[in-house]
Image (cartoon, rainbow, N blue to C red; front, side):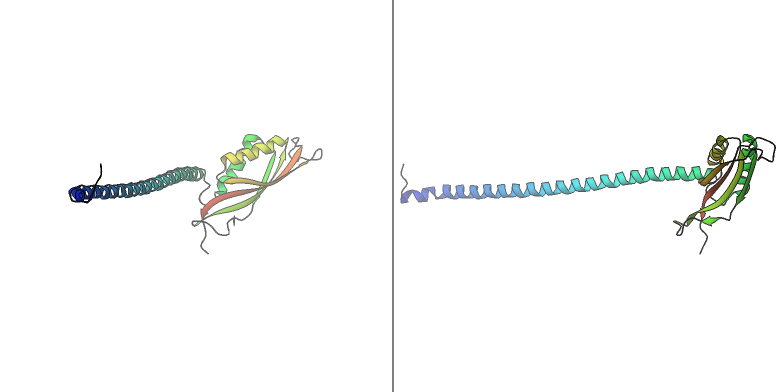
Length: 199
């Protein structure tokens, strides 16, 4: 079939309709592509926001667990008497009670003045230590380890053994008449946490 010049007026409407449909189709495709792109961007933004919220929620939960652990530790230390002023009288009574219960032959001690451990206390609280020199006569080494274990478990302070030396006594070296075999000398820090003194 051949189309000549006389057919153009008859096809004019159809050609315009086809051209219009092509333009509408191309516009629809462009609109759909733009809409898809905008939807993907919105979805990515929503996912990023969700991830951000998830991260914040995990941090809050982690901080909550950390606060509970620190609170439990604080309560434990407070119940043990570690937080607050020194309880020197309690320490002396504890040493006497351990000496009597463990039947230690001879126990002497001297407590030095308290000193701060922190140059810059955090949150208004600082650690303080009082050094105690303990001298005792022993039947055997286990008497010393039991004494130190009892102090760690029962003292109203944190106990840090700085040094201990044990030496053998000469025969007949005990004044009490009991057969002490060894003499020990230990330096122990009694550590407490309390509000730092104002400078």
